[in-house]
Image (tube, rainbow, N blue to C red; front, top):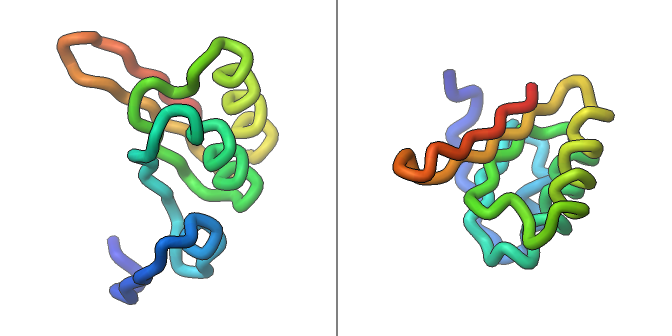
Length: 91
């Protein structure tokens, strides 16, 4: 169900992440920025879909998972191409 059809045109990720009508964020940015943006999405209490790789190192992956576990209304979804069969769902 779509609650709002408002279109946000911006080049500022924080504006999109913190917009009152955004419920979920799909991240398709360079991998070295995934951790920074995922932590902002978690703090905003939004659902996040991260393209692969989730992060550039194991420590950052754990940091992202920990951040989403602290927010009970949020979900984290990371999915890569089916041929690699790597999925991570945390809701």
